[in-house]
Amino acid sequence: MAGLVLSEGLVEHPVQLVFDAPVTQCSSKGALVTIDAMGCQRDIAEEIVAAGGDYLLAVKDNQPTLSHELDRAFQDTEDAEDFDELVDFAETSERGHGRTEVRRCLVLRDLGELPSAKQWSKLTSFIRIISERTVGNKTTEEVRNYICSRRLSAVDALVLPTALFDGVASELGDGLGRGRFASRRR
Image (cartoon, rainbow, N blue to C red; front, top):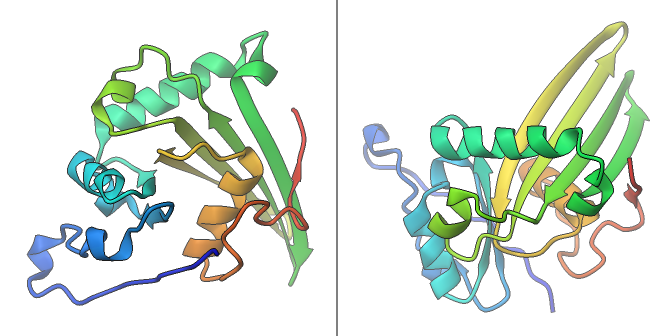
């Protein structure tokens, strides 16, 4: 049975903006815990894995070494002849309310000898989601990066952050979002 637990809380002192949720209370065997970039910390990842869960952590500039390594890994595979073997890819496109949004997801699983593969508990993949939004004649692009300890397909990796961070609750089980999102090779 799949489940979804959303948690938020007040921080007593805003200066202490450190992820302080009781991860072991919301993690159970098989749970996938998603946390924004503030929670992208090795000790939090270890705590989630020790509790029997998996993590999907947003990576931003608060982890400059990891962020640079992730950028470099995707850059190195982008022009590789064996791109389709190295990267799982999915894309979706939606139109409505005067805008078009195209989301592309790349999942890189062969982390090989990358330093982060050894530093992060059970790290299995780097995930990049590129959102291209067009309103009228103006197009903007946003790139979001994640690290994950669960082996996700690009389809599932594409829908999870979107569903969770956009506040759309859906059944979080195998085959998540397969009706709306199509996987294809680039």
